[in-house]
Length: 469
Image (tube, rainbow, N blue to C red; front, top):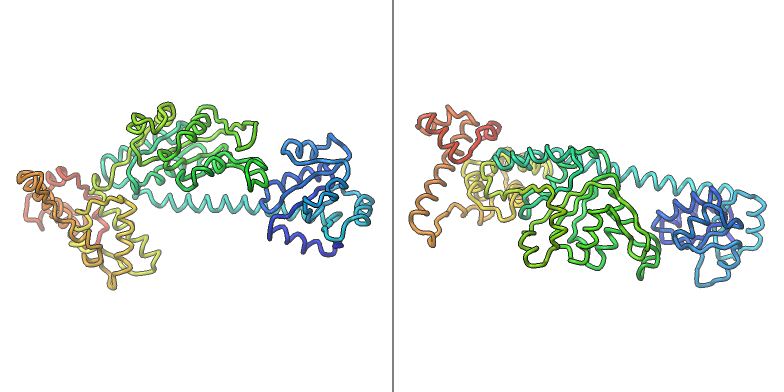
């Protein structure tokens, strides 16, 4: 039989695998120990023993379906329980000695100072987990706060998005973010959360497609012990972890109709019910949802619930694809260039005019995310200080061909002319670093004409001021 002298080794066992634990004593100490162990995924509490049926630990154990008894005999005689550790939380030295003299040799008994050590050890681990969560949350927030140019740029539509974010962020309203894959929906959600009244509280990001259909409910709402095979202990759901904070439901358009019913109830009443439980819990959280699907069309096709759509559609932010905001490509490209240099530890400080023209004309089906990948790839391939066209993917190098035969000659002529004007304006602005007078001089055209063409193509001079030609 193991005694107090080896309790530190036994505590370390808690971190190696799930241990079956019996708690002796349901008073204040036992109740606190029960609370801590219930949050530890490596611990499975098989029972609580106390003579007092009204002890707080006994009541708590009953609430969570944990067996209770007035003596440990019933538990120790049940071979199927496979008890690993018994913790005496009574603080009664006489009780501990009696237990030591009668315990089986294959079960670890922890009591006295050892029990206090276990309690402090588990509590310390819990506090460390909380601190780590806060640290990672803060780190993500700091990283995301550096991405403001990625979200907005200079495009007029994106400036409207900025204004919408500023208006809705301080309110508790539900927000629905729409946009193609890679347009920055998660970054917009982070911007809203970062400017909200709960900016310093929990921010839970949930990708609804990251979990198999049969596990999504358990991940979102949690489950109780015994709810299904493998549910050996209660588990807190992601929605409950977002209590008093912000919850971001990404890819909401991919959720099944059955799950939509449960999410709707959560949005309407803040109620969640863990899988296998008969009790509901009320959660108070700000909800932001996002999808790349056409929810209105899905409602017409009976693939998305109308009532859920109207509940989500309280305040909508629609993000444009990158091909509709090409004037932002130079500033975004240089932003990603700086990030890639830091990540890859390479000194690639500029993008050539011809390479920038290729980037400007590509349509980016993957949007901002694809542009970032293209720039990072170019930095990897570049052996000098300047990115050139041959560092770009072939599909980007050949994207200058805008002629579409099926649309006719008039369309082709206008498209080619527009492309030439846009490329020429950007070329001269890059060369002049955003100095319009100098750019007009290089283009051998009146400054007023140059300004008019900039306005026609919605080109802002500011992003070019820090670009090296």
